[in-house]
Length: 459
Image (cartoon, rainbow, N blue to C red; front, side, top):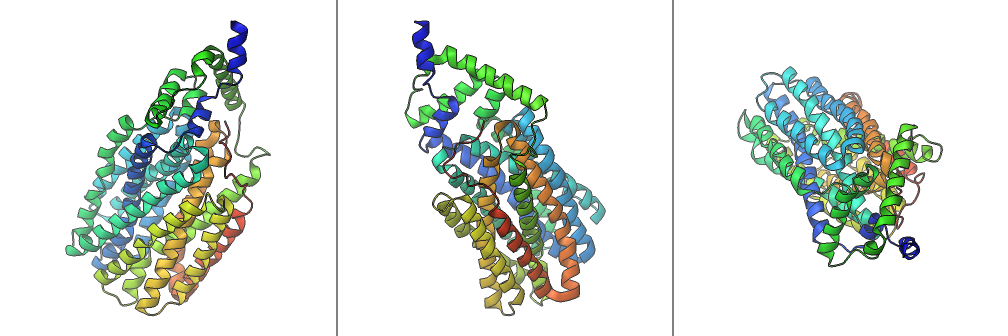
């Protein structure tokens, strides 16, 4: 009898195999929407900053230089938060870290609405950045680890599409709340307290990563999570009932081996991972530099070009709407063309669009070029977030994605300051030419990444 069980156990699918074989069902939808709403609230906060900056400068609450530092300090917090968030996710779990980050940046955003000076606002923006930076790689890792192999890339792009939803909300608040009075920017920031309340939903409503639970030997919790997804799919755990004892033994040995690997310094810079880490960091740096350098300053640039504050906000709202089709196309192509081709294509499109925007000098050209930049750039973001978690094994997946995001945030720190300097010395043409070059470098680096379409996540 013992021999029979052991032989059947040899063919019993693991929990991760069972997850990979499921079709998209209500449990996946709940995970995607639950994580995505947190993602959207993040985006709303970042997007609001571009409208707040324009209002602060116009009202004399801050100078242009102070406004650029305000953005950069927030991104400094994001750089630290992304690095720490990934490590915390690998140590304490994806769900726990996700909820904590929402609390941190939600409370800090609400407090910033009461800031008595630009200095106080800068301090609070740093703490907002800590929460924001930590949340994004953690959420993408959690969704990636629950997604079936055939649609994993598409699901992470769908998750990233919630960024467009959040940015559109920011554009609506920026257009219809910020210009209403001198305290409009304060009311806009007060709305940013929503993530703190939503953290409760995340903590109790989302599952913990099965791969993380197994790596920590929490097998009963891992099994319960998998069975919940199978229940929604209308399937039963194949072969698990006859092979459970042998499988649990094997998984405990695997968890011990993973713990030993962590203890001996498993690293994203190991020889077999070094090339992909360098390429991923390069893309993160370049895309952060160009995206935040462009989109945080578009409302302010339009005001300086002679457009009224309300008019510049309306233009920004229209440009922001183009993010949604960008995500939709990227979500389809990423499982058709593959990860590298999709990412490189959208980065190349971003390069051309940035150059076009730099030379735009009419309302029609500004809107068309801005929409194209929005379409291609956000599609590239979706592909990038899908690729990151696929490049590393479970024990360092959060660390790998978080470290890349953290390095990229260095560029976002520099972007507002550099954008202001470039605009003063060479105008919008020079500024967006530099952004176009950065997009081009990122497109080249995309081809240095391994193609992961259709491959299971490494454990």
